[in-house]
Image (cartoon, rainbow, N blue to C red):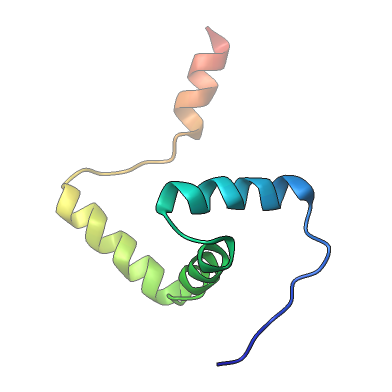
Length: 75
Protein backbone atom coordinates (compact mmCIF):
# COMPACT_ATOMS: atom_id res chain seq x y z
CA UNK A 1 0.00 0.00 0.00
CA UNK A 2 1.51 3.38 -0.97
CA UNK A 3 2.30 6.04 1.61
CA UNK A 4 2.03 9.81 1.41
CA UNK A 5 3.61 12.56 3.49
CA UNK A 6 1.74 15.81 4.04
CA UNK A 7 4.02 18.68 5.01
CA UNK A 8 3.21 22.13 6.27
CA UNK A 9 -0.09 21.47 8.03
CA UNK A 10 -1.17 24.18 10.43
CA UNK A 11 -0.82 23.18 14.09
CA UNK A 12 -4.53 23.88 14.61
CA UNK A 13 -5.43 21.45 11.81
CA UNK A 14 -3.39 18.70 13.42
CA UNK A 15 -4.90 19.50 16.83
CA UNK A 16 -8.44 19.26 15.47
CA UNK A 17 -7.63 16.04 13.64
CA UNK A 18 -6.26 14.55 16.88
CA UNK A 19 -9.44 15.51 18.75
CA UNK A 20 -11.57 14.00 16.00
CA UNK A 21 -9.45 10.83 16.00
CA UNK A 22 -9.87 10.44 19.74
CA UNK A 23 -13.64 10.95 19.44
CA UNK A 24 -13.79 8.20 16.80
CA UNK A 25 -11.43 5.87 18.67
CA UNK A 26 -8.75 5.98 16.00
CA UNK A 27 -5.10 6.93 15.78
CA UNK A 28 -4.14 10.20 14.14
CA UNK A 29 -2.95 8.28 11.07
CA UNK A 30 -6.15 6.23 10.98
CA UNK A 31 -8.29 9.35 11.17
CA UNK A 32 -6.29 11.10 8.45
CA UNK A 33 -6.65 8.02 6.24
CA UNK A 34 -10.42 7.90 6.83
CA UNK A 35 -10.81 11.61 6.07
CA UNK A 36 -8.81 11.36 2.85
CA UNK A 37 -10.61 8.24 1.66
CA UNK A 38 -14.03 9.72 2.32
CA UNK A 39 -13.07 12.97 0.57
CA UNK A 40 -12.44 11.14 -2.70
CA UNK A 41 -14.98 8.36 -2.37
CA UNK A 42 -17.68 9.86 -4.62
CA UNK A 43 -17.44 11.81 -7.83
CA UNK A 44 -19.38 15.05 -8.17
CA UNK A 45 -21.97 13.31 -10.35
CA UNK A 46 -22.38 10.58 -7.74
CA UNK A 47 -22.77 13.15 -4.95
CA UNK A 48 -25.42 15.05 -6.90
CA UNK A 49 -27.31 11.84 -7.58
CA UNK A 50 -27.19 10.96 -3.89
CA UNK A 51 -28.37 14.46 -2.94
CA UNK A 52 -31.31 14.21 -5.34
CA UNK A 53 -32.22 10.87 -3.81
CA UNK A 54 -32.19 12.33 -0.30
CA UNK A 55 -34.31 15.29 -1.38
CA UNK A 56 -36.82 12.89 -2.87
CA UNK A 57 -36.84 10.70 0.27
CA UNK A 58 -37.33 13.70 2.53
CA UNK A 59 -40.27 14.83 0.44
CA UNK A 60 -39.56 18.49 0.91
CA UNK A 61 -38.60 21.09 -1.60
CA UNK A 62 -35.35 22.77 -0.67
CA UNK A 63 -35.07 26.33 -1.87
CA UNK A 64 -32.35 28.90 -1.96
CA UNK A 65 -32.19 30.50 1.47
CA UNK A 66 -30.79 33.79 0.14
CA UNK A 67 -34.24 35.35 -0.10
CA UNK A 68 -35.04 34.42 3.51
CA UNK A 69 -31.75 35.88 4.67
CA UNK A 70 -32.43 39.14 2.80
CA UNK A 71 -35.88 39.39 4.41
CA UNK A 72 -34.42 38.76 7.85
CA UNK A 73 -31.75 41.43 7.38
CA UNK A 74 -34.38 44.01 6.42
CA UNK A 75 -36.19 43.60 9.74
